[in-house]
Image 1 (cartoon, rainbow, N blue to C red):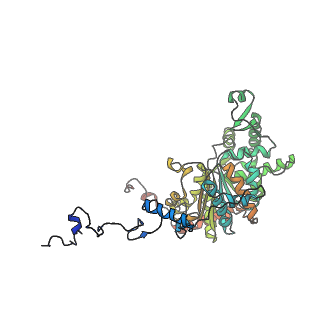
Image 2: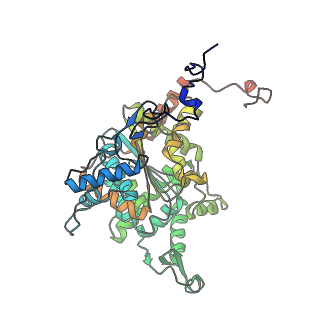
Image 3: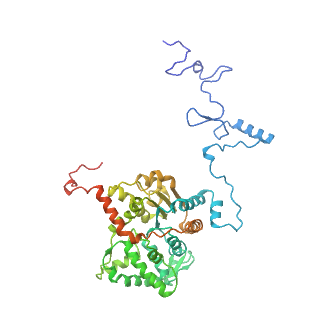
Length: 452
């Protein structure tokens, strides 16, 4: 039996513990902590001022330094204090957009926008990166097609696009020479309806703009080249050709995103063809026997082939997401389509840049973070540091991003991915064949064990 008063290895008891944990005069209690801040990492004590340290002692030390005129004790050896010091340039009206963003966008979502601009220009616009862009929200009615998207396409900074159908429909207004106007969002919508005015928040336009655009689409879709099933990229390419002809006839210059994409060989897909006035007009013509069909299967496979082609060609894939919604998922699902569904070895997109106002905690895809996308195979986990989410309105961020990119990067050669669709689909089919055939019918009946 162990003698009383001696330390027990099993329990760690000491003489002091028998006295209620109190140490004798002149002795330090066995559990007394050394001066300074005890780190959350066992065995390490950090001897510097901290909110978790001894307050009175730190206060006296600071007052003493002030009295002596001593230099401020800095913690800059900490790995947490290695970021750029907050010391912005003084704004005087002479700064460029690049200088403004790099020199004054230092914190919060301004900093995220600076990081987005730097990621886009320093990495995503490298020669070997294929850049896909998604468009959600009413961007083209606000003029962003002409102001930002067309310059990005013509500079070779965007190689392929997934958009809502609404953005492409409203983009067409400008290519047809139809007008959109700035308005007051507080006006009565009942009065606007009576006046024949349609409102998209603070954008107003004549109701006849819709009727004229519908008539244009119905006319061209009745053409012989439309009388077949096709991917939405083929459909939009054909539409862009006719919009471009109308622009030339009107002498209005380059106004339409569809027209610019046609000229540059940039394929434009829509993840939900029926969810726009363009799709509604296609559906209406089907009632009259029109044979134009937008094939979603072709869209799924063609978009996957673009990403696979980028990777197998020794390059990388980057995504620029303006908003969220269905186009965001359609862009990101290319990797699960390649990996999970087709069984082709891949790791995910290399670069992720999103501009959104959606929260991540509601479970919606629009706000889902790139870290969450890693678990789905959509983003390469090794490239997660090359991911930026900027919580900002796209109508604010996109013009700034475009100006920044055009200021610091030279134009890239156009990839003309639309012209390479057959080649890329052949690659996808070859890789799918190497991955193995799907299970035979008798192997997939309901008698197989259920997935748990």
